[in-house]
Length: 216
Image (tube, rainbow, N blue to C red):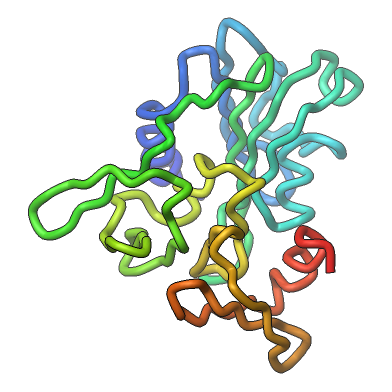
């Protein structure tokens, strides 16, 4: 990951996270960037290996966004971590981790604001059926509206409740409440029939995680 990419990621993060958030960016083996806050400091240095049991380790191991309380035996201090893999053309390149002194209350509004033509519309998270990657933006679909959010799918995934939204494909995140039917598909994968009739694939990469998460 080059310095320009890190700078772009940090610009996005600054807009959404409170000041007491520490940020760590890693490749698949070690940390390449760390910015500590005054509230919690894990003393990470660029070049430090990713520790087993950390939020970044879990996100890379599972290939999914992780929201987890991490005990003090990992870094010497407890923290609440939100980590998401950074995926490029289907390959995991690293992870970005937001580090809090405790589990944050919702730090974002429960709305996603989408652009439709020349106007913007706030949509409640619980109205979203699915989100799809389209041309480096995120297409957001509800029963009554559809539009685009400026963040890409991986960035936006950080801010969605993991008990409602699940990544099922590198191009899709679905709202579990809007899954009408799960059909078996070829190569041990699945096909989701959403309540609006949209058919969304569960890719082989996400099939095991998807199945474990929904308990079947």
